Structures are given as C-alpha cells and as structure tokens.
Length: 245
Length: 307
Image: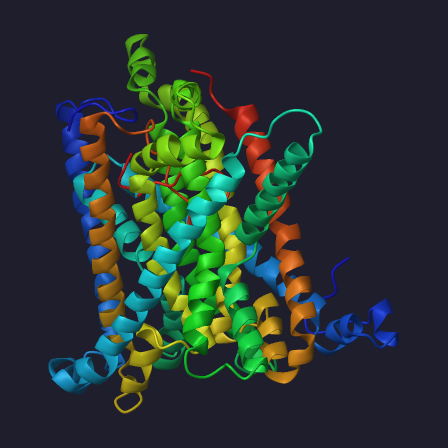
C-alpha cells in the first residue's frame, strides 16, 4: 500500500496543475509520510524495550539499580529532545564516527540520519515509557499485594496473577499518551535533516512560500489523522480495562 | 526497605541476594560507563583545549548566557500568554449552555463547539510544525528577520500550550465539588461570574502542580526554536564550538543547564503539591506521569516525582 521510500511517487493528482498537485509531485509528501510512520514505529518499539528495562531498574529492590534507573529518567527527561537528537548526529556520528548504515550505500546519509534519529527518539521516550509503567504499578493498592502474600502465593504467582495484570491495565492510558506525543515528536528529526513531514514544510518555506498554507494544512491533517485514532483507542481501552476499585 | 506492592520486606536470604545483585549490577554499570568514557577519551573528547573555553568568561558572555536569556525570554513570554489564553479557553468551554433553541443557547453552543474543536486540533498538531508555519508566513511577509524567530517560537508554543492549560484547568474544575457552582448560582451570580470568581481560582490552585510541570514542557520546547533560527541556548552556543570542535563539551554543558533548571522546577512542583495536600486543597491525587509533551489526551499532568 505504501510506496517504498526513495521512489518517486506517481499520484493521480500530478497531471493537473494546482497547488495540491505540485505539493504532492514536487515534494514527495507520501515518502515523507511513510518516513514519519516508520520513525514512529521504530522509535515506539525501541522506547518500549529500553523503557521496560529502565522501569525494571527503577522498581527493583536493589539500591544501586534503582539509582541507575532514576538517574537515567532524571537526566534524559529533563533534556530537550532537540538537544538529544542533535547530539546523536554531532557527537555520535561526526565526533565519534559511529555510523549506523553501510557507508558505501548511495543513500547512506538518509539511512544513517534516520537511524540516528531513532536512537535519539528512543533514548528520550524511554523515560516516558518507564514513568508510564511505573504509574501503572502505583495505581495498585498495597492491600492487593498483602492479600496475595497472605493467602500464600509465591513471588512469581503474586506477580502473574495479581500485580502485573492490574499494572498493565493502569499503564494503558499513559502509554497511549506517550505514543501520541512520540508521533508528534518525530517532527524534531528535521533538526538533523531526516526527510519526514516537517522537513517537507521546511523545504516549502524555503523554496515555494506560495504553497505554505496548503503544505501546512496537508501536513497538519496527516498528524491529526495519525494521532486522533490513537487518542480514541487509548480512551476506549482505558475505560474498558480500568480496574474498578 | 519496607514492604512495597512489588516486594515484601526482605528476610536474610533476600537481603543477601539483593547485595549480590547490587554488586553485579554496579559492576556492569561501571563497566558500561568506563566503556563510554574510554571511547570518548579515545577520540580526544577530554582534551584540555576542548574544555578550556568554559573557564573563560568570554564563552559565557558571548554565547551561553545570551542563549540562556533567549531560552528564558521565550519561555516566560510563552508561559504568561499561554496561561491567559488557556484560562479564556477554559472559560469558553465551561460555560453551561441553556437547553432549548433560543438564539443565546444556539450561539453559546456554537462557541463551545468551536472552542472544543480548536483545543483538540491545536493539541494534535506538533509544536514544531506550527513554529515552521508561522516562521514561513512571517518570512513570506518580510518579517523573517529581527523578532520573527522569537514570534514564531513563542506563538508555536502558545497555540499548543494554551490548549493544554485549558484542559488542565478544566479537569481541575471538573474535580471540584458540584456544590461550589450551585452555591455560586444560588447567591445570584451569573454563569460567567460563577466560573470566574468561584471555580477558576479553586481549580487553578488545585492544579498548580500540573501547571508548574507544564512550565518544564515549555522550557524544554523552546529548544524547538533552533529550527526557526531563534537565538535560544543551542542556536547561540553552537558557533562557539566551530573553532575547537568541542561540540560534545558544549552539549554536555547545555544539557547540564537544562537538567538543573528543570529538576529545580519539578522539585518546586512537588513541594507545592505537598503544601496543598497539607492544606487539603488538592483536587485528588495527581494524574499519572508519563506524557512527554504534557497531557495530550487525559488532562492533568504530574511531575513524575509526584506519585
């Protein structure tokens, strides 16, 4: 359904000459949309993995692990995403020479930039995933765990049967909100020239100011279309899964 | 450590296990840090000449401090304007629409509907897109230089954050006892007066911790102004690194400034929350943290330290 990235997109609108058609034909807006979606998916998976690890550290009973987890959250959540993504490009790649793509590939700059952006997005949003999971645990009254222990359930039984199901339900809404914010934050990747949707708007600004209003409407509408269903699904799931207490 | 939801109070065996885990985890973490530091040192990132500029006043005076002022200036403007607009939006959304099809009722319904649509749309569009659009519009109309970047940055932040603040205030009002608005009505205040004199002040007080943590979001988001050439901390400081190639050192210093500022503000939010709790004035427990850019959906953010 989606065109593979990098290919020119033939849209039925390209033959007619109007602002919309030149927007779609000259600025590869479908490719940009696809890049935004890919950026969202990869960063979401990455943040979920790293965030779960950090949450495990933060919730562990071992002081030093808790310290590591808490420091991670306090450091990266208080740093602007723009700075983190800039660091990925300027420090990781340019200063330290860590590249994440095959340098003989003709599309090296694009792929490398994209992957660096995914790394930055992951590092930043992992803190929010961690806090979402932690807030899921925080919704559970202590009595639930005490009741489970007092009827003789072991640690793993308590986790499996009592704690984790409730924690997961409590974390659904904050996790959904994190995903929405992550989708919108993909725009920051324009800082290191990843050609996603906001890069289209930026290019239009520089080259073709006459198309600006149309470009903003189209790109803005894409984000509304992407995030609204997430919001609806989050609200629906949150209501459906909420634990009645 | 006492018992928590996850772990019972440890006995002697568990304590031994924790100690072993602590040592192993500590060693793994230390090794990871050593690896990072070794890699950085290998590439000469700790060379004296890269860090020496930060001992010189001129670096601070010419680059970092003007940038910090740019960041703070945009943040303060955005916060003040967002709070004002947010309160207005909240009032428009909170007006009780009378039943029936009288012209007033239809007009009020239209106002609430338009406000709701506005709030939903401005929260769904990324802040950076709005900044780029406003900056592009200003440039096309010959206003791109001078104050253009500042206007674009502040306006982008205001469009989004005023809607977020509107929702925070609204959820604060929702959590007030129903008797408050009824009492206002019964002593003869009009609808608008009840909202303005009775509900808003209480809601704002109750939601103060959430509003303060929104300040952190705004402060961090001023960095987006980098993309519209606004002279904030990153944009102003980067040229200082062109001579020595010490961008790593510079980014560390800037990150430290941001972390210190935001950490202090989040501590303030927690302190205010405890104060309010002691006075019995909170509107229930703070909402769960975990929303990177403020409450996108569920109103009511928390600092993260809150829970």
